[in-house]
Image 1 (cartoon, rainbow, N blue to C red):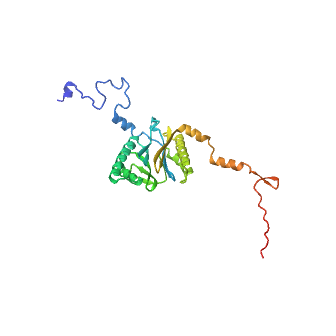
Image 2: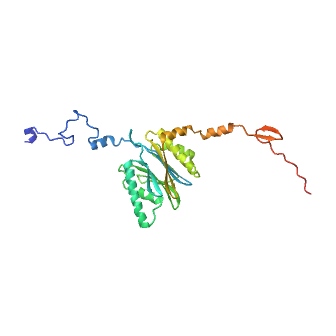
Image 3: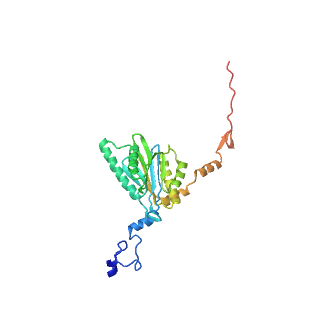
Length: 292
């Protein structure tokens, strides 16, 4: 006969809380007391969002990103760093799971350092992107979430590559990654030119991220701006996104400036002592003597 039938003994529930603690009905139990159950119920539903962008132009590569780290509707950190330097001439934007991005950038930094020691010089930007894509592709299908834009300068000049955790590797001139990327692309497609000056490139990157943070609920905080030159990367600035957006709203649009310029009257010109408003009349041509 079983012991449960003789002594009315019941085995303790090892899956629930400790038998020495009060039951959940007697006191408040935090929702994450069982990590496995919490991850199963909340893990797949947690949404991540950010706005990162990078573009290549005549004077190097610009990388910009917001600083808000979110987990669903919860702002985890308002001042995180989403642009990670790899070495003196290479850095990358991070989008996806923050822990995955930080871990794989440490791995990439280590592998590039080992290759530089073996070969005597660091690999090219294309080689670094190929290495990262190959390492990430081995973990395809394991919920790894890393989306990055590698920005650097090597022997061939400024270079930009997009790498995703499924092994995707794409070269290009303009990339924006994250939940705010559709809004950032709208600004970039309108104002991007390869022959921009550095100040024009800075203004375009700040404008794109600021507008994206205004429309995207998962983006916000500040706007970080980096510039990769031939001499190495440079940390340009960090601006508050709300202040930057309010300043951009006060600036006149290019179409409004052009219309205001067209509405202004033409400058006055003097012809034969009389004041004439408008364009100059055609010049008087004199007949030249015939050559014999």
